[in-house]
Length: 356
Ligand code: NAD
Ligand code: TYD
Image (spheres, rainbow, N blue to C red):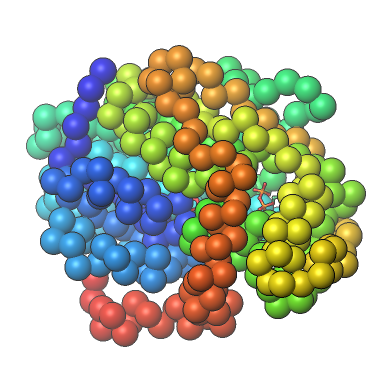
């Protein structure tokens, strides 16, 4: 199966993974138009995209995936032949304190995007079409000490975040089964890398270490996550978009399981050296705190289908990826300061003067 998109609509492209994807996809596909629809919530940051802002083939539109008229207009105007859907509320802890927005964006917003995409695809304006839903391994729930999530693992989401993603995944499946819409669905493990919002584990720890603040480790610190560099994720998405059969689901993972406490210790030690601190100094900042309610114990992805069918494998080793990530944060302290102070929120108005 081979598909060459000419105009893609990326949703949530000002966030962590979406912005990394836009950079790599535009470099690999210079002739393809990219329209980035993003509501610029607290997680959306146009400073992630300054390198591409003036590219004639790139267009940023501030707006909500739940705005049917806007989505429809963009699909028609740009003759979009692929939607790559990243836009979401993405932080588990926020979904526990305020689940409503997760349902509104991740479930209802995704349904509106799907429905407008269905109408656009059925109107026959474009020769071929794909709708790619970017999802998470968290839809499968939690594993014990052994075993892996495969694409056949039943959905058993445990947090409001993962439940909302599972809801959208099932809608995507339904649009394929019911209307024959050419959908794709990827489910990825935890990402790390540049432009990661410092509320998530790895960038939060880097930021707090630099500033000598406590490092909050939830519960006993023995929960396990399977880490993948965001650059590898972006590459896998491109492969799936161009070569996967419509209707298929692919897990994306890096075979890279870490206990939280081990990863925090590693980041502490790497930063001891980088910041010229005494060995072991940063580990003293570790503070065990009350556990997250419903905290999934272990995630681990079996990505063998993606390797077997489409030949994708991660290129980063964890050693190279985490070192590069730490160095990126050290070199981009202005970006971090902007995000933590909230200054990035005014960037859109300053750059675009309120226009999209
Ligand atoms: P993020 O929180 O960094 O970015 C989300 C982006 O979506 C932001 O730019 C935000 O402004 C935008 N957005 C939110 N609501 C919107 C709306 N209603 N309309 C338009 N735009 C809206 O998230 P991320 O970490 O980049 O994750 C991207 C996708 O990948 C999500 O769907 C997430 O579920 C999935 N995912 C993330 C990870 C991870 O480790 N971060 C792992 C697997 C899957
Ligand atoms: P997170 O980055 O929020 O991703 P997710 O919950 O989607 O996996 O958290 C990764 C792991 O780190 C998770 O087990 C919760 C834990 N964690 C902490 O121990 N302390 C923290 O401050 C954060 C944000 C997460």
